[in-house]
Each structure stands twice: as structure tokens, then as C-alpha cells.
Length: 230
View 1 (tube, rainbow, N blue to C red):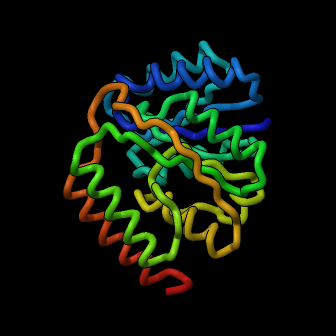
View 2 (spheres, rainbow, N blue to C red):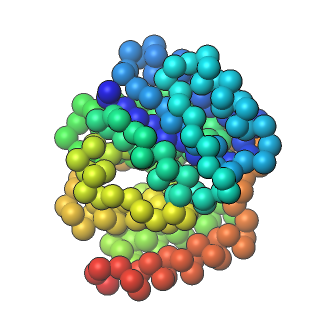
View 3 (cartoon, rainbow, N blue to C red):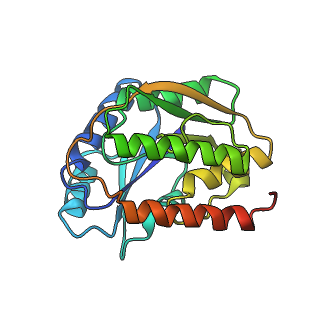
């Protein structure tokens, strides 16, 4: 199998169907040998039922359910345990990156020489607060960890299997992306970034709040303090 894409869903009953249907349509049209591992990450709405219905319709979709919510990284880690692809990665379940752009990231990694590939969001459609926090976060990642990427939290983030196995992601919270990118840097893996168009959520509400942002900042400082190189 060429690609295993893990997508965590937490109370995404509005987004789940359009996101997965678009991915299946594009990936199948491109004739990729793939699987989508949809993780119901402790949802309290109809997300699980929607995922199960989609899995019954499309054999490429596999549903994993966890309860309670295991935070962002924890849900992805559970999905990774079931991944069989030569290229392994994860994306978001809110539809902010199109299926066509997700394929572009996969194709760039499959056909190129890099070990990891991720996008850079251009023409961002989210509000000032999200754009400001994203820019500040990218800057702190550069200053604290010397990880030179333009958009730390852009999705999908894909890895070739040997890189995934050596990086061995294990941070269950919202520092999941940073942990992967920092470990990739320490181990000398190469990363490519390609531009994709950012789009509005397919529906529902973002789970990012100011309190979560502050918590992420403290977690990042703790991660930096405990990191193998400072």
C-alpha cells in the first residue's frame, strides 16, 4: 500500500462527510493505492455514525474509535498503529485543505527525494487571531528549535515509512507537529514544503480557544526545556 492518511475527528459531524468524500474521489481518480484511517477522537455528536456509514460505502476508509478524547496527537497516534502504507501521515478533518492539494503533497513526496513533505498555506481565510498566533508560533519554533519551516501546523504532513519509524511520534497534544519536525531535524531528514490554497472550514466550529493557545505556549516551553538539544 502506497499511502496511509490518518484523520482525527472530534465533534465534526458537519465536516466529516464532505472531507472524506472529496478525498476518496480525488485519490481514487488518481489511482493511488491508499487507506484513510478516520479516528473518532471521543466525539459526543454524530461523528462516529457518519464515519461508520462512510466506511461501509468506501472500502478505503477504516474507522477507529477512542473514548475519551485523547487530544490531537493522541488520536493520530492511535490511527498510526493501524497504518500499513509506504507513506504515512495525517491531516485535519475540517476541510481547510482541499483533497486536490492533499494529493499534491503526496505526489511531491512520492516523486521527490525528500523524507517528509508538508504544505504552506497561502491566501489564508481564517481570522486575524489565528493568523497572528500562527505567525508567532512559527517564529518561536524557529528561535527555540531552529526548525526552519514556513508553516508548522499546515496539513497534511506526510513521511516515508522509514522516517516515520525512526521519528516515532509520541507527543499526544497539540505539539505533535513540532515534535515530528524537530525530531526530523535532529536525525537529518529532509523536508519539502509546497504551497497550497487555504480555504474556509467545511462547517462546524474550530476548537482553538485563547485558553488552549496559552496552554500550548507552556507546553512548548516545557518541551524545549526537556528536549535533547537546547
